[in-house]
Length: 339
Length: 95
Image 1 (spheres, rainbow over the protein chains, first blue to last red):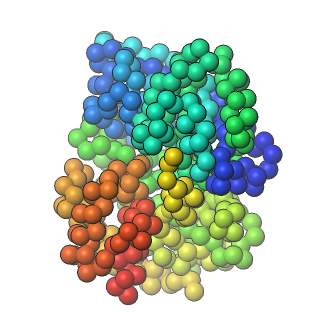
Image 2 (image 1 turned 120 degrees about the horizontal axis):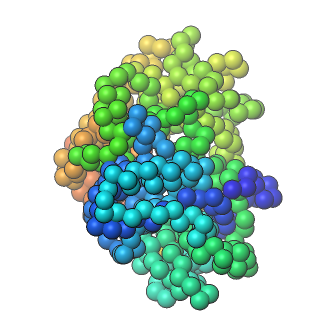
Image 3 (image 1 turned 90 degrees about the vertical axis):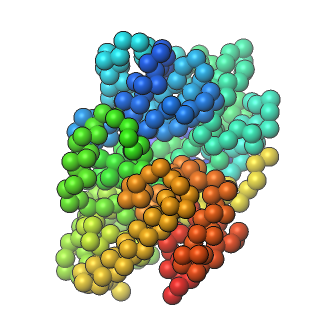
């Protein structure tokens, strides 16, 4: 994925106020089929897919045996198989992990489909108007976390309603050979190409954890980034034992913070956060929010002081930061009816 | 004004207690099959997250009013974007 195409401000504006086009170059795509497909996905992922019906999607974490996160995957149920989609930065390890895990299941077929398909997405408050052009039913009927097979350009495209900006978002999983033609068509329809930097700001603003950037220098567990709610109770997934042990250990908790307007440069990852003279945590990620006109970020802080509404300061410059409740802002799409 | 460690600890204790009460309320009143302590403070309540629906919203609003004496109306949709946002709403109304 490219960092940016024009400027981050322009691309951010497209995502928040109009429609941005995202090319997920290098996304991981794996097909899973066979009688043990559901059992396999319930073992390699932290969430059960037993309940998924054809045309529904869910997200699941792929964990290492030590409980740290390899990737957050989206699992699409297509009827005859499942299609597992992985963020580009984590694709290589996640795909290898999924292929290796399949050897423990006699009746499952797991195939790397990354070369067969490309992933394009439109996100933004106007994105549904573009997506509607590819559907022969009202766009409002395509619920969040669902997908449909649509005929386009002589082939079949999987169109799903998923996204990470908090705005309306639709993803096209298209045969690789047709991707450049679809990209050109989406641009023609008004979408503006957006890179990772603008996307990163939007996802922070609505508190979608960025596993690529939100950490303190090493692998993170779901607890470190506030994704423990993606661990299904009663599910015997890889990494569970290590997480149960980790749950019993004292650990810092993730919080969101907004910096005082006086802060002029982003604090580096690892910058200490203080209460009085005591260090109580460290910054894990920070971006500039054009809408809020200040730096915003995440941190992990000691459990005893972890709460929304706390007034801390950054070590060094001493700039004040206040922990706040996610999301940082309300997506533009929230007030817009579909259709 | 930056908090002292004592102030931060005292306030966090009270806030965490309120968050725990709201998590337990969610689980009990909506019959959710989740451990209340597994609900994250910043976890979304709708869509991604707890995946509540509009019927749950009505039940949740009644539960919050019954338990905390705080109303949640149609104009308070932003207070339902996460567990923490809901707790902000309760704290603010009770202040």
